[in-house]
Length: 231
Image 1 (cartoon, rainbow, N blue to C red):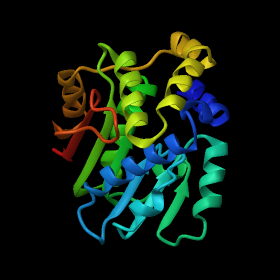
Image 2: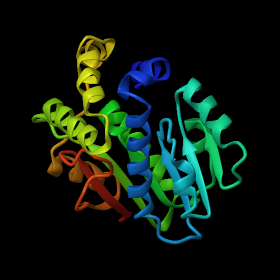
Image 3: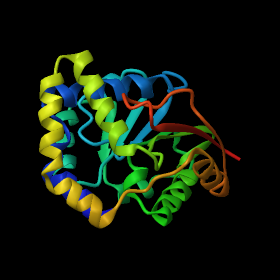
Image 4: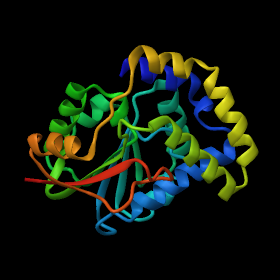
C-alpha cells in the first residue's frame, strides 16, 4: 500500500487524462455515493477519497462528511479546498481509526481494495466494524475481477471520454499510462483481484452480511460494489 500511496501522492495527475476527466470521474462517484446516504442526518465517511472534487455535492446530502486520505499532498489539497465547509472534515487514516465507536451511518471504501493486500483489507474491515453504527452500511466499491481487468478499464475510460467530451484525450492518456511508472509499479507490487464469491467470503469472515450491488460506483461497470451490514 505504501508504494501506491507514494505514487499517487506524486503522480496522481497521470491517472486522469485531463481536468475534465478528473471532474467527471469524481462527480459520478459523488452521485453514486449519494444514492447510498440513508438520510439527511447521516454521518458519512469516504475512506481513501482521493482528490474528491465533488465532495461538497456529497456533503449536501448528509449531516457531515468525513474524508480520509493517506497521501500527504492530496490531503493538504483537500484541506485547502474544503477547509471552509463546516459539513466536511478531512483526516488521516490514523485519525479516522481513533474516532469513537459507532460514529458513522455510512462508510465508503471505493477504489482502494485493489491497492491493499488481503491482510491490509482485513484490518480495515475490522476498523470499520468499530466505526459503523449497528444499523449502518459499509459500501466497498470498485472491486476488480481477475479476468480482463486492464482491457475493461481501458474500454470504460474510452466510453466515458466519448460520453463526456474527452475521447481523444482518453486515447492519448492510455498511451501515456502505458509508458509510465504506473505499469512498472503494477508489475512490481501488483494489484488485488477478487471474484465475486471470494469477496463475499472475505466480507462474511470479517463479520458482515454482504451482497453485490446491482451496479458499481463510478463508470467502470466491469468492476463490483458490495453492500455490507454488521452480521
